[in-house]
Amino acid sequence: MLVFAKIKSIQQKIKELPKGTSIGFVPTMGALHKGHLSLIERAKRENDIVVVSIFVNPTQFDKQEDLINYPKTIDSDLSLLKSVFCDIVFTPTAQEIYANSIVSTSFNFDGLEHQMEGKFRTGHFDGVGTIVKKLFEIVTPTKAYFGEKDFQQLQIIKKMVEKNHLHVKIIPCDIFREEDGLAMSSRNTRLTNEHRSAAPFIYKTLKEAKIKFGTENALDVIQWVENEFKKHPLFELEYFEIADEDTLLTIKNKNKQQKYRAFLAVFAGNIRLIDNISL
Ligand code: PAF
Image (cartoon, rainbow, N blue to C red; front, side, top):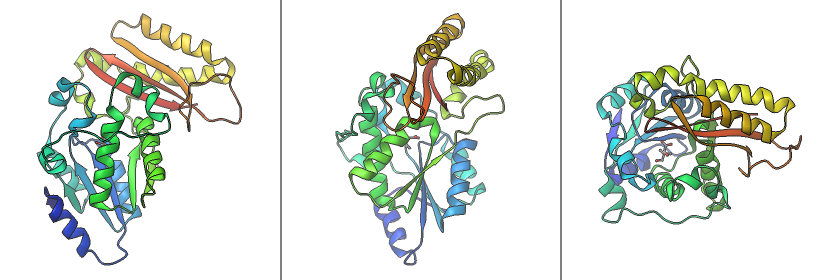
């Protein structure tokens, strides 16, 4: 496994690959878990080589405190990557990526950026767009893999690729869950034992909402979920929304032709978790 921290070095290596080599790319912020590994294993099966980036991107954090506390586990990340036969790892510094100007580009994602996470995390998607575009330019992947846990991010990246005519195929990957249903996330390691034990409540509520959505109207389902969280002593719901999968616009009237998804963000103490379910 080759590890590069410099843009020039990884680009040189990629240039030397035999013509036509397909590159599967998995961008990450490190603190790797089984969810990441499943993306890497899939990328490995579907491409000639796999590149993983580990970069905690400062421009996508709206709270400095969250950036500082984001788990950083580079040694165990590199061991895990070796264990799944990753070919190339890119571990740049913020200086290498942004030089002396740690700012994001402003994007227009046709409104996708104003929904859900966009309402609560100012500038987050500009930060994501900025880093993912830079990484795509450096790595020149054939296919790039993103988990559906960050479904809004996935749709935004697809939009960026489409609008900028980038030559990369975005591959959505199912949410990877712990046995008790909690969606895997690097942030889970920061939950207290109490919050961690109670966390299956989140997915359980989403699954019940899905069943209710089969027979009830959306507003009733939304109210039911909000009440369930109000009653729970450990979680504070930031939002629960039922939205169209493509436009991410909040549901108005249920329409059989449209595909919907339920999305939520919830605080477990000061740890913010997100999850979603296809309805
Ligand atoms: O989903 C993530 O881990 C990050 O948002 C990403 C795509 C690696 C960009 O920093």
